[in-house]
Image 1 (cartoon, rainbow, N blue to C red):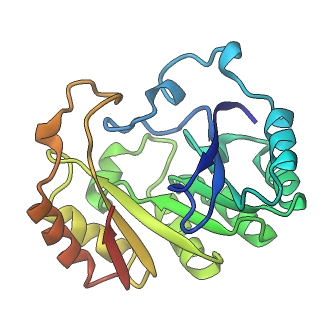
Image 2 (cartoon, one colour; image 1 turned 60 degrees about the vertical axis):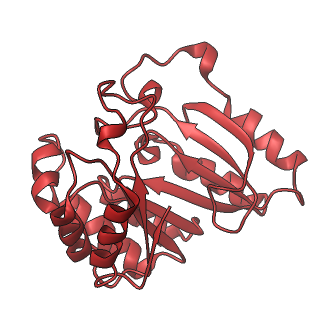
Image 3 (cartoon, rainbow, N blue to C red; image 1 turned 180 degrees about the vertical axis):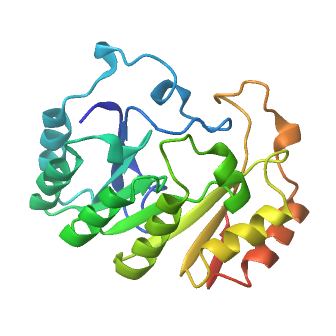
Length: 230
């Protein structure tokens, strides 16, 4: 595992749980609005890497004080030793939350079949039309469809979520995303916030107003049981 970020306590990353959070290096997408460009487009420096054993030792020390470990990125499923690492965490008695962009459905299936992740969070980036424009050639759109289906059918618990960026997403995007995840149990609408992003030109003009977010929620309410603006 290439771990380049380690937060020792958070109340925000696993619903209802106190968790530690790790960030894995590398992603197979290049979303303009990504807030972790250092994990995607910048060189991975050895001095920034946390050893697996550092994380495992910390979790051993914090047993009884933490509930879970959340694993995000980057895209964690790119890590060839993700499954062995999760197994180590599970042996310590922790819950595990895994974030994914859903572009590697075979890995999603392997992990689901092993039943070692307690909570999944999949970023549904776009509607079908924009997915087909933004996925690189080696990632077929069917990967997204397969991952959504697998998570909805097999995950113990899960959420889907989308960061909405004005100029990229519209109400049409919400309709398309709604159709992709129709029947899902939980969906979060996240408004774009300017800051550290791959595309430094993005700013507050790319954020939606509260009224616009409510309109997006009304669209998504037709497709998903529990929709919230986060």
